[in-house]
Length: 510
Image 1 (cartoon, one colour):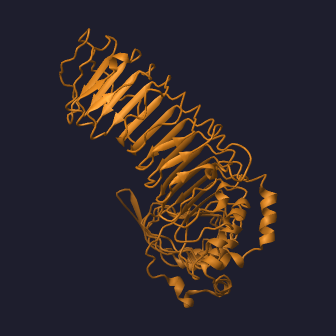
Image 2: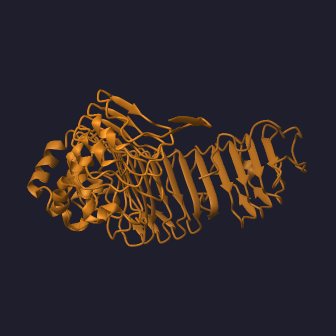
Image 3: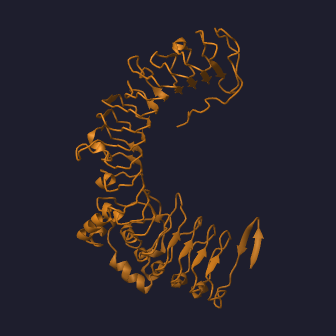
């Protein structure tokens, strides 16, 4: 029975609709409002593909687990789906199990997933830490996965390293610690278990933290580590919400030779040490945030205490954010030789960069670091952004910034006078935004290369110095973002242009 309403097809199926359709290879019911699949779907033993994307299904019938030839089960955007059928592990030819990615909910996954050794696609894996659900240890058998996204409360320890390395096709890993309200689940009722599942249920019914010792042997894992060093393909690692006392050492294992991107968003109030990541030879992009107790960054960060050689030889972008206790960053010459972009934000106690030289750095962003009294030595720096509560004396006169072309000062609520130094001879664009108490800028006449002066949301600002005739001045009032007429001492009065957006080519939003 079909009915189309606002481009959505409503379908109702009798329970025996598939009894005489045994030769089907493909069944696609995506973007329909179907709420239940008939039990007779188990008769379609030749099915290779089932598309159920964006349907209203809450459960799948157990008979679906008889489709031994099934290769793809697409459940993407099925936001009402609560669980997978108990016998899902029987689909031994399944290559693509596409589950919905839910923000505040989850899909219950039963034990037995480890039997799907041909599985290549599993966009997300939801964990409920009890013996009635599939444990994270079963994932180590799925060596053909290309990506892995784990969500839920679980333990991450040193034994993850060997089995991640054994997954030769794995390119992207996202580990997200998230406590959700699981609510009632039929898995916890033993009467819902089928015969094959009862054995598996008993076999791996262990506490999550102890299950590693029952699956696999340490000698086998060590052998896999040596064998797979040459073929590991992991390129991106994201860790979110982890609040354990220590990050595992395998995060910085040099054998992850293709790992190019790491993002750690931790919200961690226990860990006081950064992992040693400096010996990852392909690491280009690193972002670390939320380490609430970290106070110092030193040699351990780049692996100086464990290996000979300089750290972070390939790193191009680095970001530190939300570290309220961080005070000091100590380094050595030769570290970060190719770093081009550095962002430091919401580190209110950071006051010192010790012996840091970034020869290739071209872009530096600092926001809400009110105690910072200096910036690293950056001979190639071309763009500097100071946002929020910052010490505007950090580009002190003795600091040489010969290639600085763009300077942005934004959201400094207490700033009254902006002192522009003579150590920025190449400065071409000066942008000041959202500084409500700013009255003036001094030293503008030193800027022989200045081309554009852009002022926005600074209602008390007044230009007192004479500017060269070639300087383009853009002035915007507080709210209407329209130019206003002001009095300026200048050789010409046609410096003010009505062309071009504010801060064209510069980023003000972090």
